Amino acid sequence: MARNIEIKARLRDRAAVEARAAALAHHGPERIAQDDTFFHTQQGRLKLRTFEDGHGELIFYQRPDHSGPKTSFYLLSTTSEPDTLRESLTLAWGQTGRVQKLRTLYLVGRTRVHLDEVQGLGAWLELEVVLQEGEPEELGVQEAHTLMARLGVSPEDLVQGAYVDLLAHRAATSASN
Image 1 (cartoon, rainbow, N blue to C red):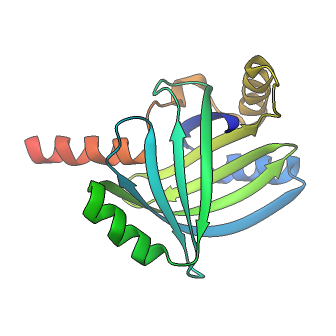
Image 2 (image 1 turned 90 degrees about the vertical axis):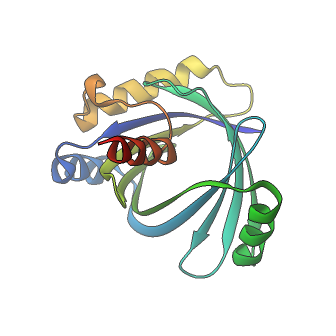
Image 3 (image 1 turned 60 degrees about the vertical axis):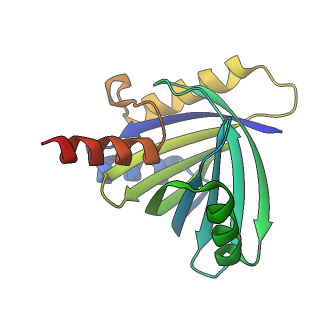
């Protein structure tokens, strides 16, 4: 399986972070609307990501749910029929949540810098440092920390979990109030 080192952080000043990302990037900005549907699994996470042009990607991944840089193992499979696949997976396994976002992608070296506007959550940053086969995770973690500093992202802004978890927590908190 492919691996990367990921971080997720709240964006307090999106414009400032985006200006820094644009100055460092060799690619971008690329705007990508994404609709992610999550399904029940016995381990890891399984999501179907659909794009505006009608194609999709089924993504299985495993990663710890702590704040800070973490290793993610993932497997991606493309589909030209995401709606039918979503219906099949929903009938078989059931959905656990849905995340809709507008992602702005920059590439800084081998790192994917995602500036996300997540429906119901606001502005977020994700970094994905792509690791080579057999490469020590520590190198990717160091790279993530260095890029965080260059983008002006504070360690206090790091969060654990996935957007789907944050949305579920927000919904549960709203329901109990």
